[in-house]
Image (cartoon, rainbow, N blue to C red; front, top):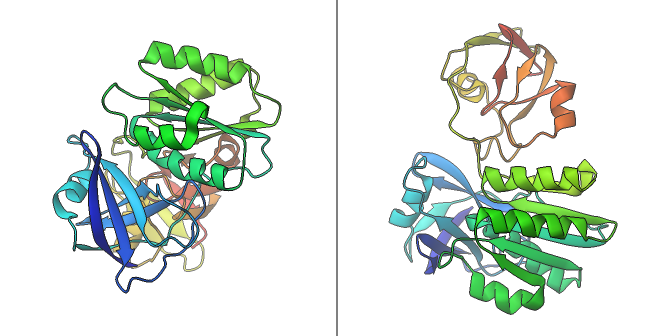
Length: 309
C-alpha cells in the first residue's frame, strides 16, 4: 500500500506517533488486535505495531521509539516521515492476536512494547472482554499513558523499575482466574521474566504469549549449502549472509516482510538437516520438530540443509 502521513504527534520523549491514511482518503483494511505494519524505511523494512481502531479505520497509527543505537529504521521514521510524506507499507499482519476463548486477558507491556497492547485494549473494550493491563515504564517516558488511563481506568496498573515490576507480575500471575491468558511485549528481559514467573506459578505454556521487537544482533554463523528439492540446485550461504539473502541473490523468490525473525512470512519447509533457530516466531515445539526454518535469520547447523523449494 501507498500511505500518506497526515499527522505526527509526540507520544513521549523520543517516541513519535505517525498517523497514516490512504492516498485517496478511502477506509483502510481492518486488522486483528496485535497486528503490525511493515514500512519500507529507505533501504530497510521494519515492522511497527498498529495502535488505533481495528475495524475499517480511516487512518493507521504507529508509535516509534527513536533508537539511536539500532539498525536505522526508527531514525528514518523520525527524520523522514512528516505530514505529506508518502510511504510504502504492507497489509497489516498479526502473530499476536488475542485468544477469543480466554476467560480473562492479562496484558503486560514494558516501555515501547505498549504499542502492541493498545489495539488489544481497544478491542477488549469494544467487545466487552475482561482484561487488565500492567504497564512498566520509566517515569516521564510512558508513551500513551494518559490515553490508557482514560481507556482502562482501574484496569491499568502502572509500575516503575525491575524489582517492582517483578513483584507485581508475581502477584498478578498468582491471582488470575482459570482460563486467563497473558500477553507480553517489551524488552527481552521483561518477556523472560513473565515466562519465568508464569512457569513458577504453574501456568500452561499455551496460555503465555509474547511478541518481541526483533532478534538481537546475530553472529555471522558458519557457511552452509541450501539444497532445493524442486530443482536440485545448491545455493551457497556464506558466513554473514542470511539464507534469504542468498536465495534472493540466486534468483529464488521467497515471500518476506520484516526480515527480523518476527513475522513468520519467510518460513520454509526443511526436508533434512539440523536447524540453528534464531527467530522469535516459532514455538519451542515447532523448533524441536526441525521441519521449518525462518530464512531471514536462522541457519543450518550442518554443512547443508535440504529446503522444500
